[in-house]
Image (tube, rainbow, N blue to C red; front, top):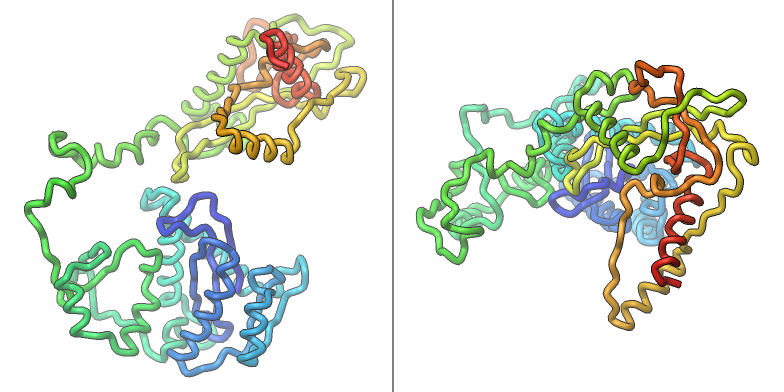
Length: 427
C-alpha cells in the first residue's frame, strides 16, 4: 500500500489524498480517498475487515513505506491483535514497494488522460482515478495466471450482460421515496454488496441504478422556493451554463512551452510576452543604449507559467522576463543584498492582536513589485530572446529599475517601499 497527495485541488467529495492498496497475489487494487492523511489508519483497518469478511481469507502482511500514516500506534495495535506482520521498505528505497509505486503512477497518468480527453476540471480527479482503478481491475491480464485481477479474486468473470443499448439512469442522491422503498423491499445479497463495493462511484457524487430496479419520479412543476436563480431569466442554453468552464479555452494556451522557440510559435504566449514587455515600458525600467565596453552584460531568459483557478482550469498564460543573476559578481555588479522580511512569529502575533482588538486587516498585493525598485548600481541587460530590435541588434538595455532575478532586486524594492511610507507619515 501507498498514499499519494495532497492534490492541489480538492475533489468533489472534499478529498486531497488517495490511499492505494494492492493485493500482492491477484494484483487487485482498491483506492480510498481521504480528506487527511491521519484518516489512513482507520480506512486500512476498515478495508482489511471488510475484505476478510467478503472473501473468507486472512491478511498476513502489510507492505508500505515508513510514512506516519502506516507506522502509528493505531495500526500497530490492530496488526498485533490480528497477527498481521508489517513490512516497511528501507528509507529512500521505493523499489522495495515497487508494486504499489508503479500502480500509483499508472492511476495518476491514466486518470489525467481521461480528464484531458473528457475536458473535465481538476475537481473531478477522484472520479478519474477511481474509474481507472475500476477498469484496470477488469481488463489487465495477469501474465502468469492469464486472468484479470477481478477474476482471480472473485473466482468469476465480471458481469458483461449489459451493453450500450441498456441505458443507465443516473439518480442524484438522495433517492426518491419510491426508489428507497424499492431498495428496502429488495435487499442486496452478499454478491451484490461485493459488486457495489467495487463500483467506481465512490466519491459521493451520484448513484447509477438500472432502470428495471428503480423508479424515477419526474416532476413537471417545481415549487418556486426550490428554484435557484431568477425565474425570469428565461431558458439557459448549455453554452451559457458552461460559460465559466470554457470561457478561457479560446484565449489561453494549454501547453507550457519548454523554450523560447516553442513559445514564439504560439500566438497566446507571444501575447503574454508582449504584455510583460509593456509592463517594462510602463514602469520605465530600462533604456536601449549602445553596448558599453568593459562592462558586464547580464543575460535574460523567459519563465513561463500557466495560472489556474480553484478548479485547476487554466485562466491565464504568464510570461516573466528575468535576469540571469547568477552571472553577477559581488562588489562589482552589486553591493549589499540584505532585504527585511517578516518572521512568521511576528505575523501570528500581529493577527492575534488584530483579532483581540477587533481590527480590520487588509491585504495588499503590488503587481510586478520588483519593477518599482530604483537601482543604485549600473546594470546592463541583453535584449530579451525573441524580441531583439532589428535596427539595433547589438544594443543592450541599461536598467533604471530592478527586474526579477537580479541579486539586488529585493533590496531595491524594499528601499523604495520604505522611502514612500516614511514620506507619507508612516513610522
